[in-house]
Length: 188
Image (cartoon, rainbow, N blue to C red):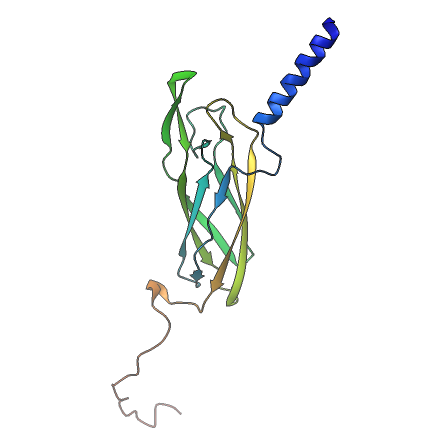
């Protein structure tokens, strides 16, 4: 009798854990499509990424308040001729959970926005490129935290013609000035 009761309790605990735990492919964060992004050598462009956390969930911010919490972080794997840097994360919102109301967490919930700078090398060929990356995060609800997840991301970049310093394209205005006559003796 004790054995069957113990077996029943173990099965019930496993079923409860499975109902709390999402499937292995389920994501708690999604990314909106990225707006068209154009860059040129000498003129970086701002990349804007919009994410949404599933209702009833939150993810740790990029700067959680405890070293034991897993931060939300972006990692990019750009093609050789492109670079992605200067990632700007939003400030987290403070959240206190019912089981520990004095401890405030720094989290993202609902929609959050991350920006970065995309630049092209001087040797970049004009045309379309695809940049791949991933958002690593740990999602929680008010009862439990789930294993860390990785959301694959990708967006397209079009590399245009290079620009001169100061962001001005390398096109010259036709000159209204006439060349002054030169002595034929100078070019001997």
